[in-house]
Every structure is written in structure tokens, then in C-alpha cells.
Length: 535
Image 1 (cartoon, rainbow, N blue to C red):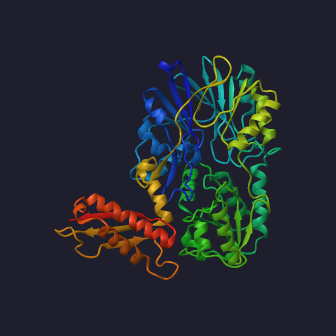
Image 2 (cartoon, rainbow, N blue to C red):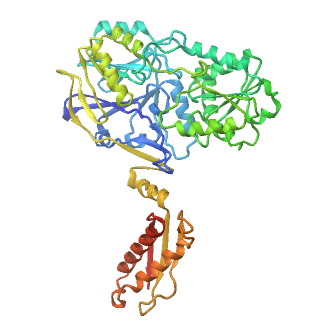
Image 3 (spheres, one colour):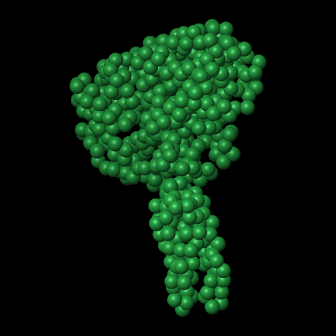
């Protein structure tokens, strides 16, 4: 969930730019939440000083929050044509999304945003048109790498622009703000060309259908699958809206030229089994994605058979291990063969390993190295690598740290509020605003609603109405839990002297406490309880 803020100028006249504006995805601790967004409350206080937003590439963790956060920022956005195409496709599918003013740039161009002169530099990554940004002010030039690697044979687009990085290094680079994702891995990442060959080998050897699941944004991988299928005499069928959207945008920009047409779900029954390659979403175990539906045999027109092969052309994002394993086990029960990157070269990371990081240091020769984009272990490993490589200053930062790069040595000078907010249906807000905390409690112990009616003499006008949702049916002895809670509610009312029952709030709180206590005694959990008392 990338969101970097760069400022230039004294505190009372500082101008800001945002680099990347991404999302992450909710886990089981956030029931009902659709997306997790960065908390931008600090910038909202400074929004009149915001000069613009620059997007390095169109991965969700780098651009996925633009539509939801732009109404709070209302600044011009700069991105490449591919990123702009995906943003527009996403906006068209969301009736609540606002139009966002976008200026399109391409690698090699220089443009001005506030006090910053921005140069976009070509790099390679697992998506079309990724760029690093060289940002220059009177204080010096800093390079924000974004996501990158040094790929000698990329599937799409030119190689990382070594010559430009070297020139910038010769002219002097104040700081390198650098991707740390693979800072714990030795050597160099294999090329996408090698992955294409690995996929072709798997498809050639397969006897039945071949299903390939990958990140929908990896256009080079999509093209590699399509080329391998074509070379093996097979046709490619696409499942999943995000894949279809990416393919449409890619085709408009010319990235799918020379490939046979992709087929849709309705064509499945007409393709001989030995001629079919299915490209689908769901590599991270998403329950509503195409692969999960295939594993549950829930698709209307598509089903797998014993002897078919499913290829996971992707890495496992930490936290997704369990849902992925669940899908794989379901597929294995169907007689399907599973192939992962440990079985064949069917995936490679889009991020630099340690040798590539050292190569970048040599090109750029920064005075300061700031490791970003990674968990604590990656950031620390990157910092150690940079120190041993002889970079004069290594500044370790964490979310919320305000780092001064110049003048003087790099130093953390302040801490600003950071955190997470949530997209929940049509609402964007914090825990309380979207109701996540109470919903989490509901997911654990359910809810009980009790309606108590008192007559004119403040006696019960009848037994209270009680409705329980997500609560156990019986206690350990088989007694109905609703009856146990109902008797507790009645006892609570009669436990209050009639003269004090005129305080309806008092009655409601007594019933609420009694119902929760009875549930806890019988069940071991305290459901959220709502009580209505009328007279």
C-alpha cells in the first residue's frame, strides 16, 4: 500500500507531491471491508499545498486508491497511458467514482510539478510502462525507483535504462529511495523470457487442459501464455473480469498485436480438451475469483477433469497461504495436477535481488540510500546491504517518519499521523465510521435483539421478544440458548423494584447485562445485545 509524500521548502511555505497512491486487501480480521487505503489525514491538512500526484505504474498497491482518495485531494494526476487506461476502465465500472484529471507521460519525458522537475526513467517490472522518477529541486536530485528489476530479456517494452541512471549518477544524486522487496535474496532475478520458455514446456507436456493463473496486471505473462499456447496449437480462454479489462486496455495500446484472439467462457465447450489453455484470475486464493469457482465446480460453462493441469504463475503474497492451499487441495481432489514455481520456472519476481541492488548503487552513486517498499526484515536487510556497499548515509524510515534529506545529513525530524482507512461498500472511513469494530465482534459472538414492553403499571405486558443471529442453538446440555436468554431478560425486569422501572434506560441496561451474562454462562461467549424498552 504505497503512498510516498515529498516536500520542498520551509515549514511555512512547503509544497508537496505524492508518489503512488495504492491499496492493500483486507484479511479475515476486517469482515465486509472491500479495500484498505492509506490514512491521509496529515496531507488533508496540507491539501492547499499539494502540487500533484505521480503514479509510477498500475499495480493496485501503487495506484488502486486514486479513485477513492482523489475527492479528498483534488490534485492533478500524472501517469502513463497504460495506467490511465486501467484507471478509466475501473472508473467506468464504478458509478460512484469521480472523473480524475490525468496528464499522460511516458518514459524519457521531463515535466514540472510544483517545485519539482520530474524525469520518468524506463525500468522493467511485471507490468507495462513502469518508471522510476528522478526528482530535482535546488536541494539536489533524488531517485524514487518504484518497482523495478534488471531484466536482460523482458517480455514487453525496453530494458531498464542503464545509460540514463549512469548519467544521473555522474551528475550527482542526493538520495536513492529504493525498492526492498527482494533485498533478502541473493543473485539476480531470472528474466521473463526464461519464464515464457518454462510455460511453453509445461503446456507442451500437458495431456489435458492447462489452466494458468497469474496476476491480472502482468501483461507480459499474459502474452507469454498466449504465445506458448499458439506455438503448441492451443487456444486461450480468459476467465475473470480483471483479466478481461487488462487485456482490453493492453490491446488498445498495441501490446497484444500478433496474437490469436482470446476466447470467452461461452467458447469452452467447443474447444477440444487437448487444445485448451484457460487463463484465469485467483492466484491469491480469492474466494470469488475464477480459479476458486473452478475448484468448487461452480462455473456455469467451465469445468475441469482428472488429468488437467493448473499452473500458479505467481508468488504467494504473505497472508494468502491458507486460501491458496484450500483451492489447491480441492483441485487435487478432482484429479488435477498442480504446478508452482518450485516445480518449474513458471514465475519470476518483478523486484531486484541483492546483485541488482548493488548494480543500481554503482550506476547512481547516491549520497543517501533510503530503503522502502518491504516489511521490516526486507528494509533492514536492504539497509545492511547498502552500508556494506559503501553508500555514505543509509536512512532507515518507517511509516509516518518525516525524513529531511537536505540540507545537512539525513535526519528524521518529525512524525506524522499514519494508519489505515477502509472502503466499505460506498463508504470510505476509519474503524468507527464504517463499523468494522462492531462487525468484528459480531463475527465472533453474533447479535441478540430484545424487545421489552411494560404496561401502565410498569409490569411486563407479555414475554419479551428475542431474536438471536449468529448465536449457538443449544447449550452443552441441549437446552435452547434463546430460552435461557429470554428467562434472563424476564428475571432482570422483575429484579428491579417497580418504582424504579419508570427509568426505561435502567431497565434496558439491566436486561442487556443479564442476557449477555446468561449467554456467557451457557455458551462461553457474550453476543452483542441490543434492548428496546417501551411503556
